[in-house]
Image 1 (cartoon, helix red, strand yellow):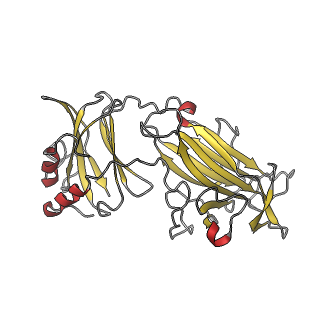
Image 2: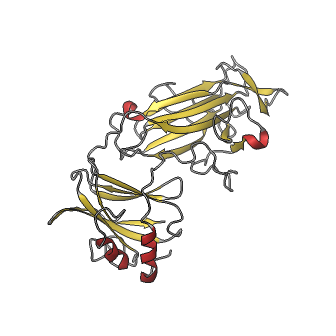
Image 3: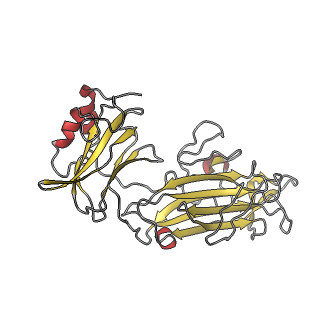
Length: 354
C-alpha cells in the first residue's frame, strides 16, 4: 500500500482537474481491446470470464471474418460451450424469467447515469455442433438482470434457422463447418423494462453458451457490438447522501456525489492522502486532513471535482481516468453538502484505492 506524502499530493490532486468525460456504461463492448494474459487465456478486458475454458477474442484481420462477424471494428468474441454440463436455457426466451444455468458465460456489471443512453444493444451468432431435431439442443443466450429480475434479449439454439457454415470451426463428428445463424440483434430499453430502476441500480449483462443434457459436442457463440443508444431516461430516484468511488471497466474511478434530498445543492468533495488512521477515525469528518484537504477547501465553485453543484437529481459524477493517479495509491474522501451559511449534510468517508 502506498500513501501520498504532502510534497506529492498537491501535483497529483491538481492533475485530477481534467475535463469531465462521458462515462461509458459498458467497457470494451466491441471487444476491440487487445486480450490480456492469464487463465483462461486470453482474458477478455472489462468482462468476467471466469467460466470460460475455450473462449477467445477473435480478430478478423488475422483469421478472416466469419458468419457476419465482426459486426463492427476488427474483433469480436467467441464463447465455446466446453465446460458446460447439462445446462438449462432461459425459462422464458424474449421475456422475464429464470436465466440460463450451468452455461459458459462472460458478464459485466454497470449502472446508468442520469444523462446516459439506455437502450442496450447486443449482436450474436450461434454455431451449432449438434444436429437439429436431436434432444441435445445446445443454445446461446443474452440476458440482463437488475439483481431481482432477469430479461432475455437473445435466444438461439440448435433448431434455429442456419444460414451458413463457419470458416473457422468444424463439427466434432463431421469434417464440415459448423452451421451458423444470421447475425441477430437484441435490444432492451432498460428503464422501460425495469421501471423501478434508478441511477443506483446495478445491472448485469451476461453472454452465455450452454450444452443441453450433456457435456459433449460443445457448440459456440459469437458476440459483438454491445452498445447503448438513446432510450427512455433512467429514473434518478431519491439518492441517499453518499460519496462513492466506483471502479470502471476501463480501469478508472467514477466519483459519484449523491444527495437526493438536496437537488442543485453546493458540495465540497474533500480529499486526504493521509490514510494512517482507520477509515472514519480522522478528526475532520472522519478523515485526517492534509495539504490535499486544504487545497480542496480553497477551490472556487465550479472546480471539478472539489467544489461543484449537484444536478436536479442530487447527483454529480466525475471520471478519474486510469493512470492519472498511480495504481495502488490510496486516499480518503468525504462530501459536504451546503447552502450559503449552513451545512445541510455530510456523507460517510470513503477510502479510494486507485
